[in-house]
Image 1 (cartoon, rainbow, N blue to C red):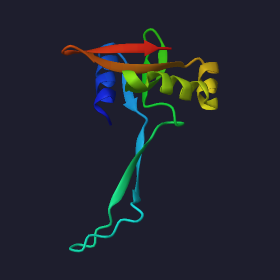
Image 2: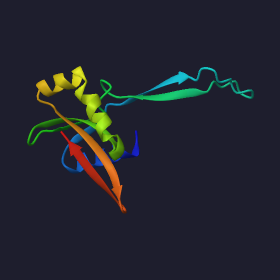
Image 3: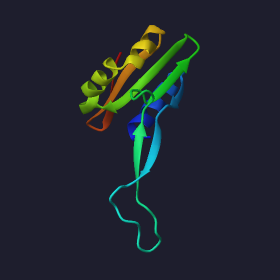
Image 4: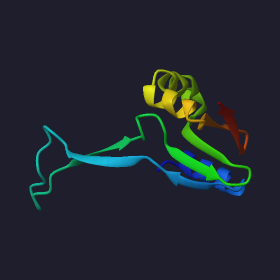
Length: 119
């Protein structure tokens, strides 16, 4: 999980939400790379996979009731992530079900982190 995701989890928890990461990692052998000559270990590649290729975090609160799916990113990647969600059929179904969807980007201004949410 990235530093920005941890920052978002803390933010939503501070606002009374139960938050969980819905991103998982897949490991594959690195093709074309040789095994270690000493121990025989095969180099591996880690790939992060988001829920439905769109969402990093799931947040829920009971009072007032709210369910939120979040895509967390840096400020410079905000527009790319928005387009990814807008082109997702799964995201469309979630909106029809009444689930809020947010693209949440972080930017460091001076010594402070600044949050931008876009629904």
